[in-house]
Amino acid sequence: KAGVTQTPRYLIKTRGQQVTLSCSPISGHRSVSWYQQTPGQGLQFLFEYFSETQRNKGNFPGRFSGRQFSNSRSEMNVSTLELGDSALYLCASSLGLDRGNSPLHFGNGTRLTVT
Amino acid sequence: DAKTTQPTSMDCAEGRAANLPCNHSTISGNEYVYWYRQIHSQGPQYIIHGLKNNETNEMASLIITEDRKSSTLILPHATLRDTAVYYCIVRGPYGNKLVFGAGTILRVKS
Image 1: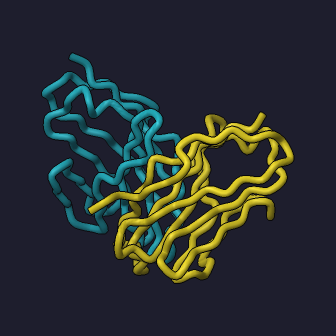
Image 2: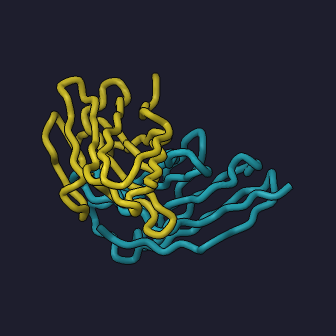
């Protein structure tokens, strides 16, 4: 089975621009979550989508948004980029069943650099 | 979700078992213990998880104490490729929000 695929792998943007990152989950997985990883803050939860609906949201400003399509693929968007948005953005997918017994599987991330 | 406490770093000789401890004294009865590891520049890799019983898979074993307040991840025969940051996470029964701490840096040395 193919793993979680994230594109692009690397991205360089300028302050004030916006960016869209893409995630293709493992086949059959209906839940997609997004995380941000920085050296200072570590891994932080952004949001989770299940069946095209946002199910949970972390403590990030409204500039960070996402969506999920009917085929479970997901995108996240960051508008009005700031230098502090430079990070590794990770996508994780799972079957989406509740009760905590469905492991999340992560992609290798998109490395975003804002200059 | 319950917080976890892990040592900052550990060393292990190649070929020996690596035992990584984790404390989660405030864990609730319906919360799972998950272990992930992350090698530089890659996404976290799922290793194993458990609720009450000890678990084993092709990668590792997970030992959970009877009171569930602590657990140990065991890599039976560590190799240099096991050098990574290991995260112990307590996960609630609803949703897919994982709260990552700083983890344990495991260095496997030849």
